[in-house]
Image (cartoon, rainbow over all chains, first blue to last red; front, side, top):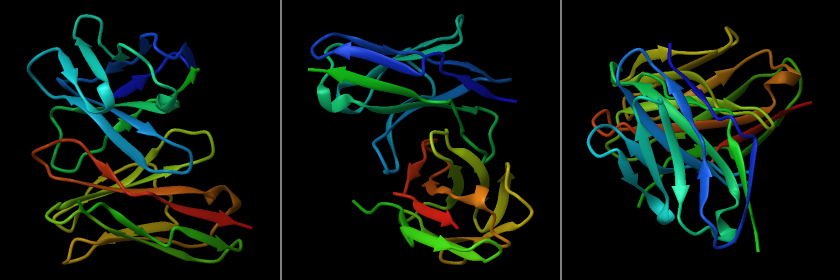
Length: 116
Length: 112
């Protein structure tokens, strides 16, 4: 069974500094990995995904994530944080052996707070 | 661009009543997923459909049922509502070739 762990409930960063939100995963096959962002009382917005190819994936709003197979990690990064990046971030995984509609499993979420 | 449409956005019910949530996927998306998100919780997978057939099942209570119709919209039916059913219910859709899910804005169910 697949699982996702986000070890940090909250990450605090000053505006303009780089940020990292951590994620580790466990799947039986090759992983399909995703990051989503959620603003209060809103739906989840897709940021980026890793399916195959380059380990560094670039996504929306200047975010990127690095896939590390040996460490089973998929950390979300941004070189320079903005106050508007403050939100709840979810890492998610799907086993590559998935059927057409198999589920994506979410981590517990990390609240990112960017101070001016 | 068209997004996933969910209705109603807000719903208030009494205990033991029934509720129906509707989801209209992005055009040409043939796969629909339902998730439940309690306060301060991560989204929990309930059920998914591909080409109108149930594809995967998660922690959906027996009191809940869902289906996908010929126009690909989906409905989640909830009966004998309990206080613990109060949550945000998200629908998502996808194409099987792309992998990522696109979420609606959610339906907030409050059970009193």
